[in-house]
Length: 194
Image 1: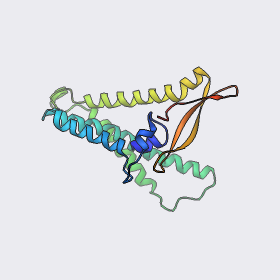
Image 2: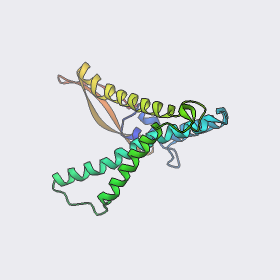
Image 3: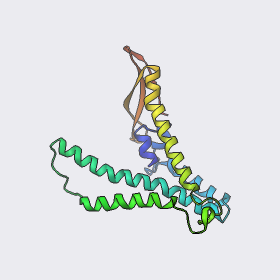
Image 4: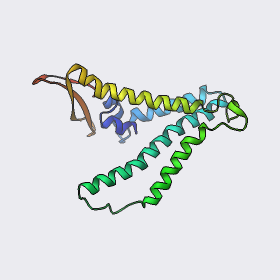
């Protein structure tokens, strides 16, 4: 996921996340995940932390699962408007609907208090803490995206243009360049190219 986000130019330091080594392994993302896993094993206390981190990673995954399922319908509608034929591999609408309903239920259920009250969950603190943190992180990420890719270009009068760059090893990434309005082509600056 990190490598592809880097290749598309949507995160800073795209070259770091996209570059591959001799065995076509993206070392940046692998090293980051390894460091996080080792840190969790070494530093985490054995009780609430592991359960909390598992809960914290599962909630945003459910949000993205819901968005992907809804995206199936959006893409189908767009294909229909463009007059394109249906795709050869198509999930039935009933299956997509069941998946959407399941995702919604799994997103709502953690907010319902357990029998033991506000501290009756599987951790020793407020049962929905991970939900608050996950939603906050998703909102913060959306705010970062809006500031970096929508607001700043409008405020400072430039446009973001995608440029394909080849890295050593044959990897191609998309770097976003600032092109200032008014025909000043010589003022291009790399934004997220790393």
